[in-house]
Amino acid sequence: MTQLTLAQAQEIVTVALAHARAQKFSPMGVAVLDARGALKAFGAEDGTSLKRPEIAIGKAHAAISLGMGSRSLAKAAVDRPHFIAAVTHAAGGSFIPVPGGVLIRDAHGAVIGAVGVTGDTSDNDEAAALAGIAATGLKADPGA
Image 1 (cartoon, rainbow, N blue to C red):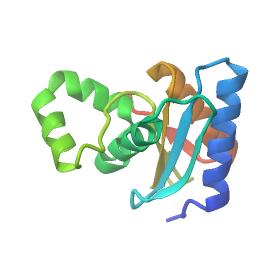
Image 2 (image 1 turned 60 degrees about the horizontal axis):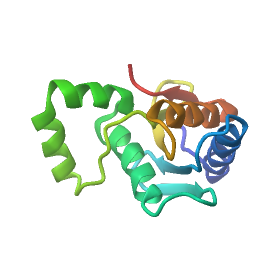
Image 3 (image 1 turned 180 degrees about the vertical axis):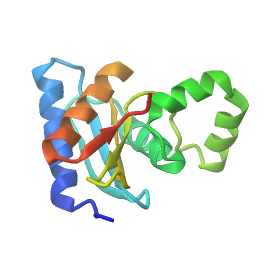
Image 4 (image 1 turned 60 degrees about the vertical axis):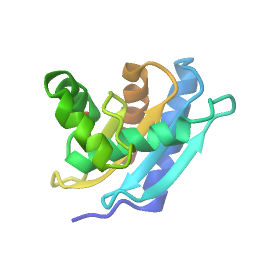
């Protein structure tokens, strides 16, 4: 399995934030976790609100914890709210099941990390995450 490097994680943050600026999104926070769920890189633009780091990490943590992009988790929250509430509790609250949490896969499809982006709409957050991952040549998996 390929490991997510610090350079890749930093590039994801940089490109995701550049994408947000080019699209005139609200100020963003971007967190990149490795395959273990440990924080690898984080960046927040000037003007982000106080809890953006926790939200970005929570989106990425949700994706890495259940091995699916947070778009799928958002659907699961509608279909199985008690399960998602229980997982959120088990994860100590660091589990935000809305789009913007995207798995990072290597060329073989193995999960090597996750990105969480927050600050604008969930769809725009996800778009910034996708742009960041694409810049590294790795595969993005936002869920279906």
